[in-house]
Amino acid sequence: MGLAYFLLSSGKIDKDVRASNSIVEDIIVIGNIDAGPILTGDGLSVVAYNKNGFELKRSHVEADGFYELLLDRTARGNVMFRVIDGNGNAPDYIDETSRHAKDISADLRSLIYIDKAGEYSVNINPLTELMVRKLGLNGGDNGDSNVDSSSITINEMVDTNDIIANAIGLTGKDIVSDNPVLSVTKNGSSNLNI
Image 1 (cartoon, rainbow, N blue to C red):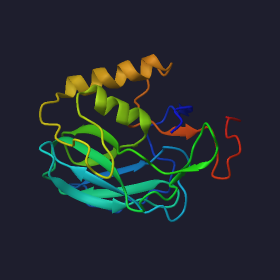
Image 2 (image 1 turned 90 degrees about the vertical axis):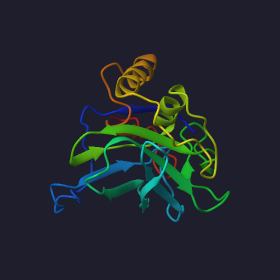
Image 3 (image 1 turned 180 degrees about the vertical axis):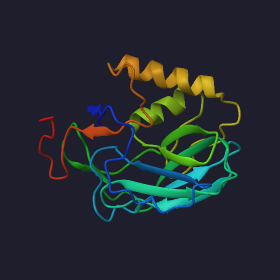
């Protein structure tokens, strides 16, 4: 999975506002799966877990990598998001380095702290997975990665996010909520004319 992408300065998802009619007391999570451009018919879904690793909700990932979850207003604290690959070894995305279709061969996760109702932008990509692993949670494949985040503090999340962003030249960016711009398109051509 290529890490060659750039983050936009906005934390908003570049989509029509699909969640705008939801009840204000709810928790709306929108985001993109960005291992590379997602292929149509990929069989990917996103599952949200509370801090103890219990499933809260799941959602299908759309053909463009977008997902949306409406969580119950009681979902508070650490919430982990994990991509589940439901199509076995079939290709799921275009690799940014090789520009070939590849399978997501490891779970991708992202972690945030939810303190109140509202809309949250949570992207899931190799950098967010690196953040979760750096926080001490073992990776895996086919849904066997660790999703119990009960021992992780909000300060550890913020610090680790900053460390990873700074290490790759994205100082001041949030690798979870800022939107990545992938370096290739679905057909494998360059997308770096930004």
